[in-house]
Structures are given as structure tokens and as C-alpha cells.
Image 1 (tube, rainbow, N blue to C red):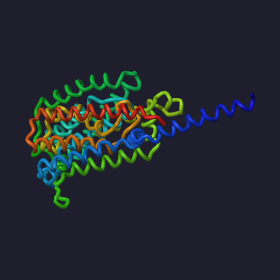
Image 2 (cartoon, rainbow, N blue to C red; image 1 turned 120 degrees about the horizontal axis):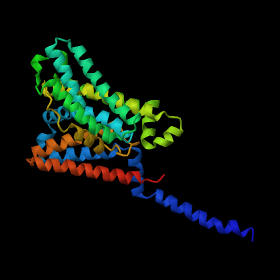
Image 3 (cartoon, rainbow, N blue to C red; image 1 turned 90 degrees about the vertical axis):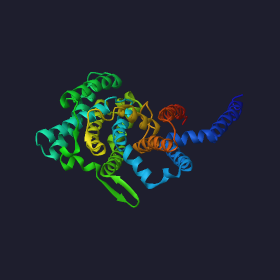
Image 4 (cartoon, helix red, strand yellow; image 1 turned 180 degrees about the horizontal axis):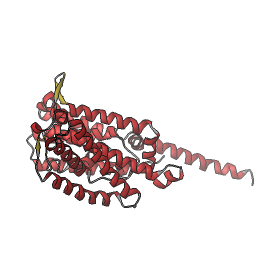
Amino acid sequence: MTAATPAASTPTASTAAEQFALRRRSPVQRVQHVLHSYPAISPFLVLVISFAVFSLINPRFAQPNSLSLVLQQVAVIGALAVGQTLIILTAGIDLSVGAITILAMMLSAKLAEGNGIPGILALLVGIAVGVAAGTLNGTLVTRIGLPPFIVTLGTLSVFTAIGLLYSRGQSVQSVDLPGLLNWTGETFAIGRFRITAGVVLVAVLYVVVGFALANTAWGRHVYAVGDDKEAARLAGIRVDRVLLSVYVIAGAIYGLTAWILIGRAGAASPNSITDANLESITAVVIGGTSLFGGRGAVLGTILGALIVGFFRSGLSLAGVDDQYRVLAVGMLVLLAVAVDQWIRRVKA
């Protein structure tokens, strides 16, 4: 009787192991695991397919001039989406990205225009404003314990009002600004492509932030906090410090984006990038970063920003009405969130 027990249990254990192996060998599950490990694959495939389709619909889409214009158009949102990615990786969200950027831009422009302050000092003041705004958001989240959505929804109105009051609703034209503040709008050729200095600056920003997330202890802590705050705290990670650092760095990125925006728009206007908040979130979500935190990368974010740019440019060249372009982007967001939900159900 004693010897029969292990003999009887062996087939059950073997069957369970075989079933587990079969599940692991399932093609669908393999795809699920791959997408879970490499979130940028989905947006990359969408980008390639959209490029091929729009090129077939209208060959002008694949021409260097059209692609150069897309890169210039997504530069500002792409830069803002870097900061948004950091915050969403911690399971937060920032609705004040556009307001912070406009406030930093108007302060830099007005100081340089009306007070004779050198361009470099005006630029540094703008970045400092972004840092201060990010610090305020982070402090309200970490010290008072308010939800990021509520905090940034409130500061969206606060920063917008301050920017409008300070600028009196007036724009500052590029001719009234020092050369340094206009530098990000200068174009140069790379082969048959023409890009701006702002596009190069955005590329550098992605490389630096991507490296920090992938190769530093701080980056690992950001992912850990986003995945499970309590587990990260029990592991010895100072969760509040990590969260605060994320908001501060994001604020600095928004201040830097103000510089890129001046070059892109050719002026500093308090009414620019009115949809920046939603567009930055759109780029992050389409890029494969989970709204629930802990999974994603800035590589996916730039792919997401390019996808939005491709759809808008490609559908425009195809003669599609603007409202259908908005509809297409909205459907992409819903699809991206649905895929994220499916990926998060992956079993180890």
C-alpha cells in the first residue's frame, strides 16, 4: 500500500507537466510572452505596416520631404511623451504637461524679449520653471498622498492661468527673441532628409532617458515602483523618493520641450499645443507602455508618436477628412489598451 502511493501519483504529476509544457508551446501564448518581454514590438509592427499601406495609397508619403515633415511635427509631442512615459511607468499620469511647457516657454520668451536677459539665462530659467512645477506635482503626490490624476488635473488649471496672466495672452515672435531660443528651429540636411535641431535634441533625450531606465539602479527602481509599490517598499526601495525624482525629471523635460516648441512654432504663444496632454498620453499608450505601470520603454513611446504622425500625414495625403483621422487615432488607443490588458494576463 505504501509503495502504491508514489506510483499512483506519478502519472498525475507527469500529466500536469505535459499540460504545462503544451500550454507553453501554444503559439498564442508564445506571442503573449514575447510581447510581454518586449513591449516595443507591437508599435514597431504597426509603424512598419502603416508605412507600407500609406506608401501604396500615395507614393508621396514615402518621399524624404514628407517623412522629414512628420519628424518635425512629432518632435514636440515626442519630447513631452518622454516625461509622460516616466510618470506612467510608476502607474501615475500627468495632465499638466502642456501647461508646464507653455508656462516655461512664455517665461523664457518674455524675459528675453522685454528684460534684455541673455538667451542662455532665459533658457535656464524656463527649465528651472519646469523643474519647480514637476517638484510641486511630485510633492503633492508623495507627501500629501493625493492621486496623480487629481494633482495634475488641478495644476493644469493653475499653470495655465499663471502662463496666461504672466504673458497677458500675448505671443512673442521669433524676431524678438535671441538666436539661442530660436536655434531648435534651424534645419539642416542629412542626405535627402531635412530635419531641425529640435529633432536631434529629442533623439538625444530619448537615448539618455532610455539608457538611464535600462542600465541604472534608478531605472530599475522606477519599474519596481510602478509594478508594485508595496513590494518595492519591502525590498528597501525608497518609493517616495523615486516618485519625486520622476516628477522632477519629467518637469525638466517639459522645460526643455519649451525650447523645442519655440523653434518649431517660430514664436512663443500661450495658445499653442492645446492638445498636448492627451497627445502625449496617446503616444505613450500606443507605444506599449502599460497605464498600470511597471512595463514599457521610451523606444515604444517614440514609435507611438511616429505612428500618430504617420496616420495623420498618410490619411491627409489620402484625402481623408480630419474627423476620420481623429477617429483612427482613437481606435489605435483603444486597441493598444486592449492589447496591454491581454499581455498583462501572461502566465510565467
